[in-house]
Amino acid sequence: MFATPEQFAAASKAQVESLLSIANTAFASAERLANLNLTAARALLEDSIANAKTVLGAKDVQELLTLQTSLAQPIVEKSVAYSRSVYEIGAQAQEEISKLVEGQLAEVNKSVSATLDKAAKSAPAGSDVAIAAVKSAIAAANSAYDSLTKATKQVAEIAEANVTAATDATVKAVSGAAPAKASKKAA
Image 1 (cartoon, rainbow, N blue to C red):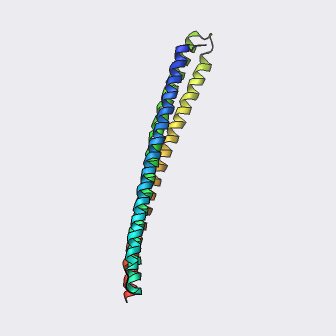
Image 2 (image 1 turned 120 degrees about the vertical axis):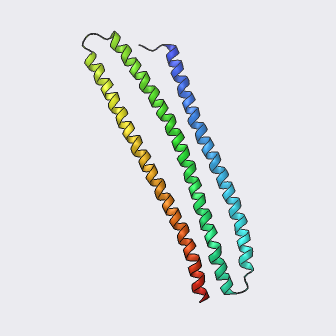
Image 3 (image 1 turned 30 degrees about the vertical axis):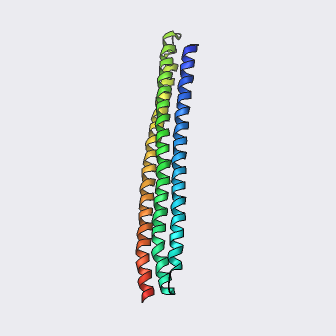
């Protein structure tokens, strides 16, 4: 009733551009993840071959046990680094998509507000209360969305801090366990 074909075309174009941006973000993240996986697989293969050669070169059981313990630490550290990289790729993709969605929401709010203003100008007398109620509902929905967004960001920050703490603790535990095992077996 208030929209012209040009307005519909512009809105459709904006939606297509948003979808393309989301698709590009998803593809870029998938590409980064695929590269990470290929790099990790190649490194794992190379490390496995080198470790097998090292273990096969052990001259006695004591040396074999010492080698196994010393070879475990780099594997754990690389696994932790891989996990962090996967997490970072996902977090960056989520952040980019969130920004796109927030931008779209702002545009929708602006459009709805403009439409309501136009409707208010041509609405019959007494409809001010209904229009004010709709605007109030939109403002409440925006406030709820903002609160949800802030809470989601806080949860993501807490999760990231917990992941970092857990991975650091894992690396420290493996680092501390390797020398302890080697010294116990030597005694």
